[in-house]
Amino acid sequence: MTKELRRLSFVILAMFLSLFVATSWIQVIGADELAENAANTRTRLDSYEIQRGSIIVGNTAIASSQPTDDRYQYQRVYTDAEMWAPVTGYYNPVLGSATGIEKALNTDLSGTGSNAFFGEIERILTGQPQQGLSVELSLNAKAQRAAWEALQGLQGAVVAIEPSTGRILAMASTPGFDTNTLAQHDSAAVNAAYDQLVDDPTNPLYNRAIAGSLNPPGSTFKVVVAAAALASGDWTIDSTLPNPARYQLPGSSTQISNAWGGTCGDGETTTIGQALELSCNIPMAELAVELGDKAIRETAEKFGFNSVFELPLKSTASKYPSSLDDAQTALTGFGQGQVTATPLQMAMVAAGIANDGAVMKPRMVDRVIGDDFVTHEEFQDEAFDQVLDADAAQAITAALVAGVSSGAATGARIDGVDVAGKTGTAQNGSRPHTLWFTGFAPADDPKVAVAVVVEDGGGKGQSGSGNDIAAPIAKKVIEAVLGR
Image (cartoon, rainbow, N blue to C red):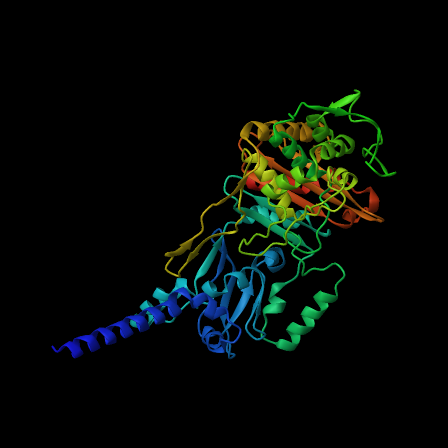
């Protein structure tokens, strides 16, 4: 072979390799991005020929596709649609719209992503019809039903987490809506149903568990403030604070009181532990001022505040603001002022304490599988941050157990189980209170951490309380997870 031919051969080989790498990149690495590109109408039209994969909880499909005789070939169908709406969302090929897991894992479910590439090649070679991949969720069907049923008639949400892994066991939001009405192939009917939901003043399209209009967390945030104190090394659960019946916010004429108007116990001083157990506002406000907003914010951020999480559903960030003055910082000591939170975030707070101070990233998908049950992708547990050490976490746990057994959170008591928990009754100006509970159980071997929010005072105006309304909801979810 002449020198010129050898050189030409190398050039042709290099061009072939470049073309091979480029096409492989497009078909495998870049497949998900291309499939989700709004301008890629061919992929969307091709996906109609593919039977979309199922969304599975336990061994049951809560979203599946059934054949139709229209151009879209398959109709998406949801089981217990309102209960699972915040999880599945809906998929509508007519309008090209999707929400929830349907949107977040669309490329897998539609069989157009990188996970489906080699399966697609195999089906081409064997002549079998292509199918989308299915998604197995981490959720617990019994816990989800317990949360959903307990929330009926209320505007609220529940999130339950497995503390050691971050796996989400329940995500319920009420009022709900029937996702089947937004998945049908009659565009006029879908638009009419959607407009009706948008106009509903109770906002059923909100996923209150992870988004929507965020609420002040009230006294559930006292757990974060206590954690900041113990993590500093300067305070213990038995550290004392002044115990007046009224407290004037620093640099302000405004005075605050404990919910019952008296002192936090009978002494001239009280402890951090007693303030948690009895849910006292004044000592936690005093403690917040002593710690300063920077220390509280840093601890809050280790729990997940000011962060967005992709579960793969995208959460709204809970907020602990910066540059607060002492009066504003004092208010955040008992979850008022400018601090706001989702139930997801407050469940992460409880889960972090339950997990010896280690906060896990929340997730709600276990694996992506084919119709032959072969796993194409498995999702792993991932640590988020270490908030405080195990001894400090256990000290807070003891105070929270006392709060449920004989303190301010008795609505969550379960016979034979030590439940650790904290209620919250957050003020909203002249509007009804927002009611909260967050906690975990069993306290000595935590299997589940729960957060509950109930808006609009639970229908009881200013007389509703977290202990009366939110705590019993959490109790039912805990019992469902523990099989009681």
